[in-house]
Amino acid sequence: MSFRREKFIPKGGPDGGDGGKGGDVYLRVNDNLNTLADFRYTRSFKAKNGRPGSGQNKTGHGGDDLYIDVPLGTVVFDHDTDELIADISASDQCVVVAYGGKGGLGNAHFKSSTNRSPRRTTEGTKSEQRHLRLELRILADVGLVGAPNAGKSTLLAAVSQAKPKIAAYPFTTLYPQLGVVTVRAGRSFVMADIPGLVEGASDGVGLGTTFLRHLSRTRLLLHLVDVALLSVESLAQEITTIANELSHYGKDLAQQDRWLVFNKIDALPSNEAETKSRALVETLGWSGPRFLISAVTGQGCEALCQAVMAYLEGAEEPGWKGSE
Image (cartoon, rainbow, N blue to C red; front, side):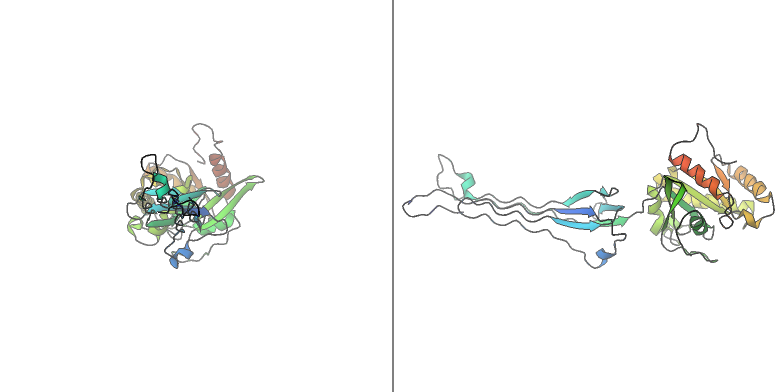
């Protein structure tokens, strides 16, 4: 609230300016980031306040907006309501997650022909405060699923330049691994390997519950099966268990296209892998695509990658069912 007071102007009118707007809070993509680790140490973020108005009808300066850098693939939820606020999946994406308050009105705003000396002002509105939950989901075209030691990491290393850890014990993969699979010049896709799934993964058993969300962005799931390890009945049970875990985690995963890839055919005598895989398909009532490969020797891997590329490009013929 202010009135003009100058020499030779004994009855100056009201000249109190309005307050400035508070700053907004934005999340923007930083391509140099690939984790959310920085948020472990800094939990609170606050944009600048707007400045108060002053005499001579001066409006207060607006508060500076706050920009918070996040990696590509970040999904933002309201922690209190579980509302999805933003799915940051584009490199140039920048979203506002909290708005600053509006500035209050000075007494100059209320002058009129009937009220020449208003002594009324208003307070500015409160800024928006939110508790956010950030999740990072990798961006990949194809996701590899399967039981521990099914050969997912070996396949990723065989068809891409990725160097995942490979060993002869379960849960070698502790974090999602990405690799770019180049079919030929100008044609490639991104493949993601997540830790092996076991029964109860969707409820927190093993490592699955931590990484199953990464599969939600993929367009195709390759279900790897160690065809040399167990009997047909045991393998059928294993495949059904993993399919159930995907379904329990979320409807989106259950509805994604999934192909069966029978791995480690090099460990079986000639034609036995084909016979075993056919028996397994009949036991499951499987009607989708199936492939026989050996990630160690490379047998069948090129045909699999070609079929995946054709699928992603939408080049498959109507009724196409993959390799039989």
